[in-house]
Image (tube, rainbow, N blue to C red; front, side, top):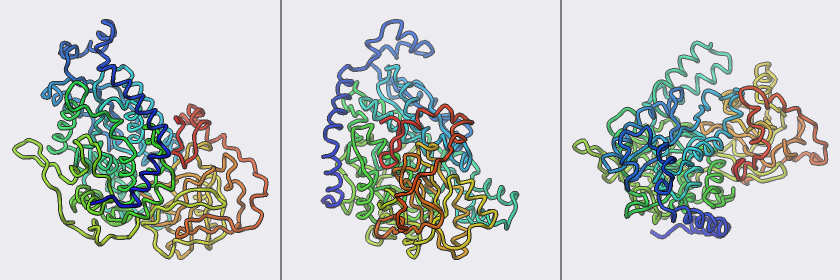
Length: 599
């Protein structure tokens, strides 16, 4: 199947705009690779420190590959708790493959579910850059021939990809932990939250519902940023095929972890199948990731993370790339919040193997790419199974097992991916409409201006949010306060919408990957803290948000001539470690380029 012309055109323009930066990047990793396994060049003292705790020191000094494990393990975060046992599995599998393995270092892994609506959320986005830096410290010992990256959730995977790209001369295999088994259905959880927000039930009922939803080890089962990350790693060829959505604590999960270690050992420079991460992470891999994002209705947070990841590999992505790919790629999956199913149901219906096969059949993915499993994305239409206790891959589903969850490309849920670029006199941003009812794609209403999400909650509690409105929550960008998610506003805005009010959100902040049915224009840049247009809005200004036309405008005359009223943001800059992140806030780029302080 020939490549879809839109996918080809977008890929060509990314390649053209990235020509110089990509060439410089490839030159850098080629020079690093030419030096060979670095531990061979270490002094005796250097080496002694590196293998002092190893049982078999002779293996470290031999020509066997040494694998570095970079882990996001902690036992507070359900998605990362299973990683506690992974290093032992990896070391044993590496030994069977004629290699050694060491935990190179740990990276922080915070939970947006815990910090949602709290001050700690203001560190969340910047934790991505901290993770990249921490992984860089781990690998700086320069004694590894390949790296295994253990991470799942929102900022962890993007941070690890930035590190893998930075150390692009090393092969890199990403090792997921899998989703928790299904609990309380996500739509029921959402309904309980809305009833609590409306004052119809008490905290005891809310707590019972939350505990029934988040009830065991593994990733949360809705299709938010964490599970969008897992999809992305398969689409970009950094996971083994079919690895993303196998539950933790199962024999198949353990076998996949062991297979990842064996594969990492096989693709080092010491063998005949050298495959550095930097060769995988080219413009085609990032286009494939964007296609997967649109076909599954994935998290808007990836519109921030993908440009930052790509920059680390010398590739430049722009908002128009996301927009054009979304227009060309049909929506094939409905997983909460875009539907009632969770990721376990999606996986059972055929999962990523079926989805990738469908996209390949219409030329919507680059097939001829490098992956950790070998050349060709067609390998990812297969699924892992245990045969006689050993892992094997067989052809995956050739038909959807539930077309309410996963559709063939001949009969999609929608003709486009539902992510649109927005541009107008209020700046540039994005909107995700895959879960928004068509009658809400255009909203024209007076503005209600807030500079803090707590102000919105207080106004709702006081009954002060009546009538149609565009809720503007400004000073939420990376330079203002670290760009926290505003997902805790979702129940409130949903209640207003269910009352029959026309309502939309407009912000220079971001929403959770689990947000959906309320129209939200997000990531507006330039942000208010940088003097962007949002800083000049006043209560009552008429706002028009048109997702169909891709526009977001204030249609009140003369608003851009107003003076910007000073806003005191100091209370966002201290407490819970926020004072340590002033360097990140001061150097953060625009949301449209990834909001990173590293590039």
